[in-house]
Every structure is written in C-alpha cells, then in structure tokens.
Length: 225
Image 1 (cartoon, rainbow, N blue to C red):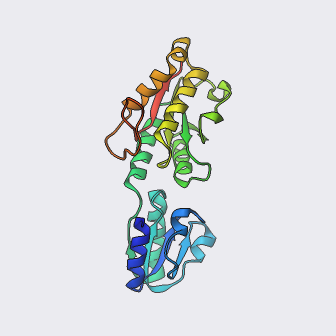
Image 2: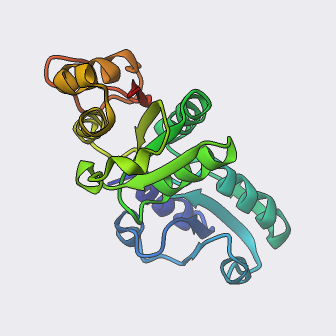
Image 3: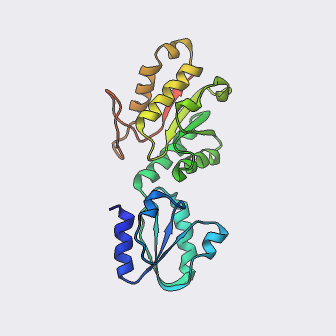
C-alpha cells in the first residue's frame, strides 16, 4: 500500500475529510480508499469544489510540485476549523527540481525526458523556462530525429521525471551526441553518454543503474560543439 493510501485510511478513521492534490485519474490516486474525500487541482473550478468542513486534511500525489502543495494549503486554511497537513511530496521530486534548475542555468538547451502527461515532467520543463533556458519535453530518444532542433546550442542538458528510467536518459544523451556532436563526439557517443551520467550521479534517490556506471538523479550535460 502506498504512503498516500495509508495516510488516508488513518485520517478518515479520525473523522477528517480528505483533500488530495494530484493529476485526475492518476493510478496512484485512483487506488486510494473510497472513504469521503475530494480531489483537487489549483484551477478555479478545482478550488471551488473544496467543501467547508470542521476537520479537513491535505495530502498530495508524491510527484506534485511543492509550490502547488503550499498554495493549496494556504487556501484551505480558510475552509475549515482544523486543518491537518501531511506532506507526502516525494523528496526525490524536490531534489530533481533543484538539480534541474541549477543545470538549466549552465546549458543552452534542456531536454526533459518523461511521459507527456507526467505532472512532474511538465514541472521540470516549466522550471527551465523560468530560469530562461529553452526546454524541449520528449518521451524518448526516438523523438530526436532532426539535428536542427538543437539550433545553435553548444551545451545540452538532459533531465527526466522521477519515474523516467535512468537508461532512457543515457539513450537520449547518446542520441544528442550522435545527431549534433563533433566527429570525435559521434565516434565516442556511447562512452561519453555514460560518462556524463556518471559525473552527474548523486547518492540520493537511486532506483536504477547503468551498465558499468553509477545511476544518477541529477541531470547530465554534454558539450556538442
């Protein structure tokens, strides 16, 4: 049973009406208890659906952006007498966002790898734009076919959503080098892609590994000039 489900069961037993922040019809939320609750987004309609109750509790789909959780918590203070906030935002999600922001400042273009409907992948793309770096959201290396997409970028960063396999990031980094790298980079694309990910590796949040190299949470970068 996932963390959200355990917390919901406990809170409902204590008499709280539950508000869940998350993506509609997301499988991690659709499996939650059928006990009284409401699911919400930060749209006007979503906020209007939140009832006024004496006891309410706020939880979040673990991959939701922290700023959305904080904004909804501030709104709900005025909707109830007693508000219990359970922070179920995944620490790996927060770290990934911080790493992506730092990397975006050092590159000319960011490739964000993940499902097109993934909330945390969309958030990574949005954050890149906030720091002024062009970002392209893709699902896999198959979405990269034309080197023209890189424009005049010299350094390309690669990051991905929390559910994106590390191997997918390696494949994207290799495709970047093959499409837009120097002749030397193209000839050594696989080795350079592995090295880029290994250099970006951090101890936290590792869930998968690369052949003969560490896994990575932080974005990888490759100089294609």
